[in-house]
Image (tube, rainbow, N blue to C red):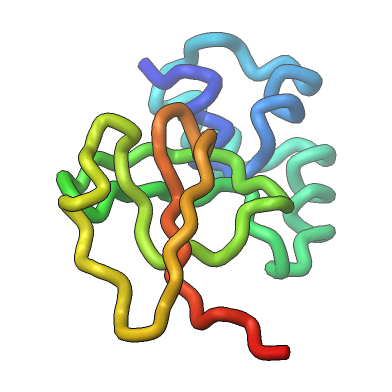
Length: 123
């Protein structure tokens, strides 16, 4: 059985769209494969409208332990140098390069911290 969230990820649609168009909370692999192979008009239109500029789902991977999670990307997420589970110690990541500053962004996915190493701004 496949959950609605898994179906949305595999169909590459937002979870809200899956709910709105009646994808059940659980479905069989066969039902999902049929939906993917012969998409209804709303799914075909969604696929036709994609520009490829914005991912519907992204895989987050901890650079310390390798834990992964699939999440909807947020517009406010900057480009991260590293992602780490929130329970890891910051010392478990490599040190920033010479002259680089490090900042952290909490609240990435369900339990990640985004780490950004960047050169200080020059005035």
